[in-house]
Image: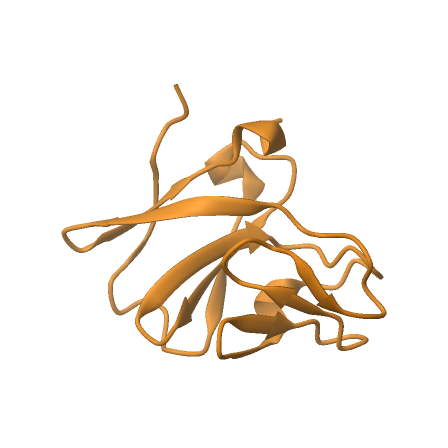
Length: 112
């Protein structure tokens, strides 16, 4: 069974922004970018599949994160590529809110 990892508290992530959750905390292959968009929380592998930029530093709008380096765009809900130059999806992780805690349930395929 995959563990639920406390990653942040409600209020830690302003709307339209993200925080970086280190792989040392989640046990995953990559760091995780934890986003808030319109009151919903999403978690993706942090590394853009195109040129390895940090998606936690990207622009977030309407359920999409845009890579800060070359503007490849990914769906926050499932990590699917929406526009070039990125051409490979990034892994999505489950996010749960329990009281004031924001929890990440790492994608089992991305555990180290």
